[in-house]
Length: 216
Image (cartoon, rainbow, N blue to C red):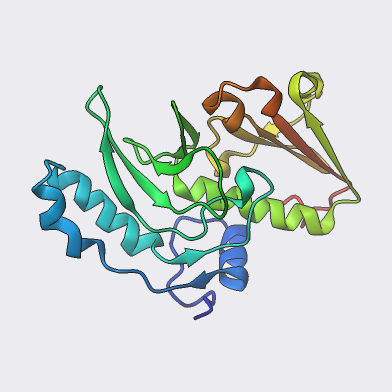
């Protein structure tokens, strides 16, 4: 079923993100995580971790969003699975299946960060809401920008961000957004960090935006 602004939208999103999810999000059916509780408890997954997965599914489960420009689009849809402990004692779980064959999983971290995991864990945003906000900004900026410039590798460090402010709603960690008077800059460092591949660092500069295109 298609989501509408009045139907089952998660709270805590900006107006831009709420509009994006309401107009472009679709919900698909998923099997309740609660059905697996006993199986996971028998395998020493803490009850508190399962509670986190249930809460994630109740808030985000089955939500399909348009793909983002990096990470081969992001998760196909949100669905928690495969809880995994770490040597430090924190627990993560999968946020949803990949859209294509990428060398990492999309995960929800011990502090509910959204990120990717391969041979190491790299949180992209401090919350799932931050990831959704970044998709919403991408969609709006792509529609409105007079020019989109892609910068990669070491050249990303040469982008002049004087006069820009961090876009706080994306809650950026490895990935950050910056807002200027008529442009947005998205800096993606997740794959570079997770895969130890600096050349994968990428920035997209959306220029010639009006107030609506800048979002927020």
